[in-house]
Amino acid sequence: MSFRVTQSMMNTQLLRNITSNMGRMNNLQNQLSTGMKINKPSDDPVGITFALRYRSELDSNDQYSKNVSSALSMLEYTDTAIGQAGDIMQRVRELLVKGANGTLEQTSLDAIKVEMSQMYNQMVEIGNSQFNGKQVFNGEMTGEKPYPTMGVEGTADLTVDPPLLKAYQVNSDNGSIKYELSAGMKLGINITGNEVFGAGISPTATKAEIESSDNVFLLLQRANDMLSSGDQNGISKLIGQVESRMNTMLTKRAEVGAKVNRIDIVQNRLSDIEINLKTVQAKTEDADMAEVITNMKTEENVYQASLSVGAQLIRPSLVDFLR
View 1 (cartoon, rainbow, N blue to C red):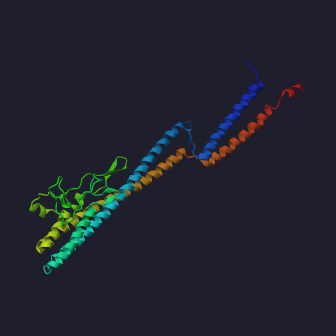
View 2: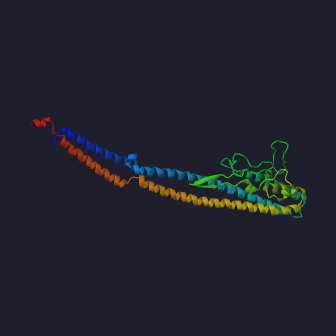
View 3: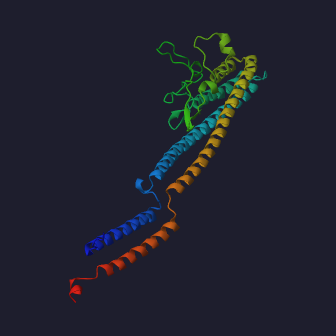
């Protein structure tokens, strides 16, 4: 059974085909202007799920990279602070060796004591070091100074509540500050004051407890007292405890260095992951510009051809039929 093809039907089909050609050209123009072959979910429903997953993973990787950078900065500052404390301890040892010389008069010991007092105050300053406005050696209590700033000549005031203690009578917070450096991997990046400077002693500590402690501030306090009294034998015995604390500081500094090396490895790994993710993302989302331009020219030719053919189809008019 045949059916009659009218001029209206031909015009409608022509417009439909031209519109379809223009739609393909518009899609190619979008790819050409954005450089992406997926500009809306309907372009590639399967590909868009992978693209969104890659974007999410890249965002997470970027945050991990920022955490790594912050952790490195914190560790490098901590290493510097511990190094400064070690330099002070080295100078303290030199002063103690000099003070243990039995030929020195009390005036010379008093001169050494003056410098020892300054070493004490400087060590307290290092113990209260801040990085980005946060205390470095006070664990999770980053808003509070771990050590009182009272010098070696001060005395603890036990008549107030709570009592005002000296630096060697307090303990730092032992909380660990952990940074998440990759999925499921957290690393503690802080070193506490107790680890570097030694645990504090009780205000009511016995003489034996005081003499056995290698707390930095207590060692400096005892050195100050011994220099005042001219106890050169005591100073000689104190040198060994100073060296013990110096070795502990070196151990903690080595620990910081080991963490820095590990974070460097993590940083390199994150860089490799970023490159891989961007590569697969580009394969999924980025348009092949050479292919797009070629297809664009093809569609333009098809469009021009459709317009030319259409002009022939709609040329007849009523006047043409009356001739």
